Length: 89
Image (cartoon, rainbow, N blue to C red):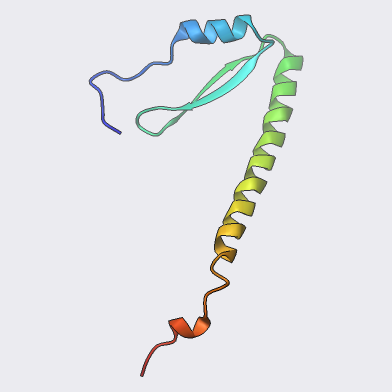
């Protein structure tokens, strides 16, 4: 990714709009340096707990999908003839 002269800053106005039209949010972005940047808005403890629980469930589901994709990718090599990899003397 080409580096710009100025670092991108997530617009506070957009975060404010998200906050105005929701009961809270948890947002992750990745900046131009590849670092995770979290943004959160929890108006109360109940919302914080609900978003925390949901994000944990989502993370587990996402991990399961990633593992399944990896297994499917690796199993695509099962059709390979093992003799193809034998060393010649």
